[in-house]
Length: 355
Image 1: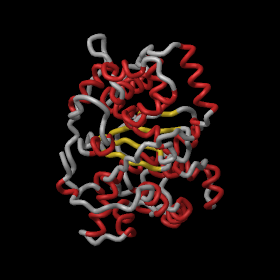
Image 2 (image 1 turned 180 degrees about the vertical axis):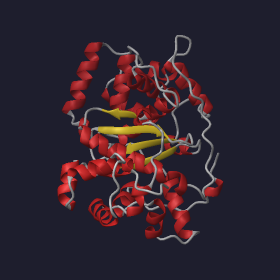
Image 3 (image 1 turned 60 degrees about the horizontal axis):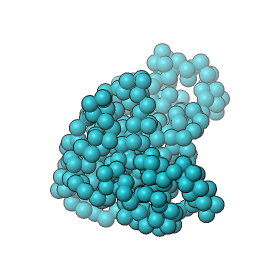
């Protein structure tokens, strides 16, 4: 922790609240110039002003002294459609805050080591071959992927399911300065999309970290191809998709645990249905209202590592929620946003998680 206020952290909290310097300075009664200089590390703020900022942002003063994780923002990989810069900046701020406290928070927990390889697509190694290698590395030799959330947690990946503040962003993957891989999933996302989004972020984790991708790479297309092959291997599913109708896709959804929409696109990409059939099935899908909810809902995959850790602190170490917030130097709003989207935890012995 720094001995003086960290200007970058001040700016981070302001972005989290989706506020401009002008809005903040007018609200707490200082000049915009003072706030700007403080955020750039040029001028110190007095204790009274810091306390006003803390009250306004709903953060403890101590957080303003925290150092940011040095991992560059350019290492974030997003699964998104479209969203405003302000909302995106706010969510990136949540991720940065998470990365600040996560190592302290997980200190008493014996986590599995991250043990998956980094593989870069090339002329000699296709995205689909990478997906097959990762299936094998995870012990999936044939058939549908089992509970993917638990599988990845057991291989050292932290998965956090929180409200992104928008439904236009499905997932985000990153890593911190200790090399810990972290995947965020949007709690607003329909459950039918969850496994594909998680596999998509796994693709980023394998192919686009820790090295920066080549600017010419279409990383989103690569991650989609990875997810499709990882969850629906062509060598196994192709014959099942020949001439399919909506009923067939519904039955395959139950088996492969992916959405009808993902299966429909997989059939198109593997050319097991014609373009005309694909368009007709899309129209039928839309008319049935499946864009707002598909039949045969998939079972929910719940991340457990973070809630089990909360349980450890409370049940075995005697922490209250206030103690936890003080340790992480975050306020109630962020604490509940990050942790209270989980179902009530079932306490397990997380010192002996399956490896």
